[in-house]
Length: 495
Image 1 (cartoon, rainbow, N blue to C red):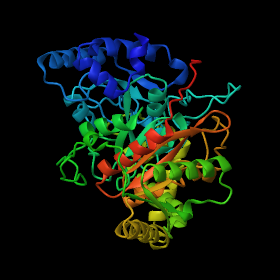
Image 2: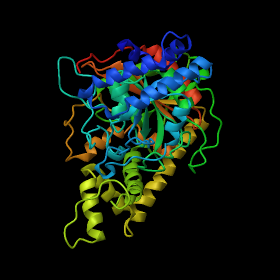
Image 3: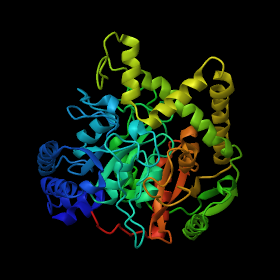
Image 4: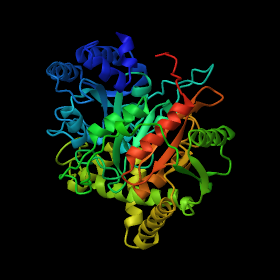
C-alpha cells in the first residue's frame, strides 16, 4: 500500500481508470504516510475524514465514467488557501482559530475536479520567507539530507510544506503560491517540479494576500506532466478576482510532445553572478547543452535591468504587504491580545499586532509602511514601480526578438541548513530570490525542473521562463529538459 504514494498523478490516474486501485486505497496510503512523517512537520492540519469522504465520492465518479484527470488524486493544500470548515491560518498566530465559511477558487476547482484534500501544508508566515523557518507551526524539515550528515535542511520557502510533502511522498501533488519564488525555490531544494503560472492564470480569490500584484498560485508536483495536469484543474477565469484573466485554459498535457526543434532559448548574461557556485554554473551549461541536443537553438541574451529586480521587489512586496495586513487587528476574527485595565482600542491594536505577527512579518510591514509614507513614497515606491516597468520591457524585447524561453538557475545554491542563515542578516536570506523575483515583477510563467545533484547529494534545479500565457509551450520545453536530465533521485527515508 505504501508504494501507492510514490505514484505520479499520471500513473495514479491511469490505475484508477483501469480499476487497478481505488481512490479510497490511495487516500488511505497517503494518510498513513502522513501519520508516519511528523518529523518533517510538513502538515499544519491533517484532514483524514475529509480525505475519505472525497475519496469515496471520487470512486463513485470513476465508477460512473465521469472522471476528470485529477479525480481521486490525493493532494495537500498550502495553508494560505482558505478551505471551508478547516483552519486556514497562513501559518500566523494572528489568524489563530480562523476557520473560513468559504472555499478559495483554486481549492474549489480542485475539489470540483475530484481531487482529495489530505490536509493543510505548513509554510512561512503569510508567505514571507525563503526557508520555512517563519511559521507559527515551527520549521518544515527537508526530506533530503547531505551525504553522511544528519543536519536538518530547509525545504525552501514559502511553500516549504508543499515541497517537502511532494518530495517525501506524503501527497501526490500540492498547491503552492509564488510571490517572488515561493514555488520555484522550494521545488529546486527538494528535487520536485514547481510551476508559477502567468499572473492572472489562477484566481487569487480566497488566498490570503501577501502582495496582490505579485501573488500567483501554482502546482507543485513530481513531474512536468503532473504539473500540466494539475494546472489544467486549478486554472480558469474567476469573476470574483478582478485580476483573473478571461482566457480559455488549453489542454496543457496535450502540449507535451517533447519536440522543441526550431525553438530558441535565451541565456541571460546578467544571471551570471559574481561568486556563483561552480556547480550551479556547470548545471546551467549542461542544461543549455541538453536543450541544444533536443533541437533548440540556444543564444545569449541581455536583460539589462535584472540587477535592480531584487531591490525593487523588496520595496514593492513589503509595501503591498503592509497595506494587505492592515486588516488583521484582533477585532473581527483570529487572535486578540489580553488587554490591561485602562487599555483602549489603540492599545488593543498595538498589542494584538505585536504579539500576533512574527518578526519577519513585522519587519516587512515596517519596511512597507516606511516606503509608502509621505516623505518617501516617490523616492522608493514610485521609483520601484518604474523599475518594474523596465524589467517587464526587457522581457518583452527579447520575446519580440524571437526568444521562446529563457533558461536560468532556479537558486544560487542547494538547500542550506535550518538556522544556517542568520535572522540578523535578512538580506542574505533575500538573496535566495535573486533568480526568481524578475518573473513575478514581469507577471510571466516560470517553472523549476530538477536536473542534477550537488557534490553533497542534494538536488539542484533549473528555471525556464516563458512568454505570457504560454504555459503550454513552456511546459513542453520543461518536458524536453526533464527527459534529457533524467532526474530520478529521491531522498533516503530517515523520518
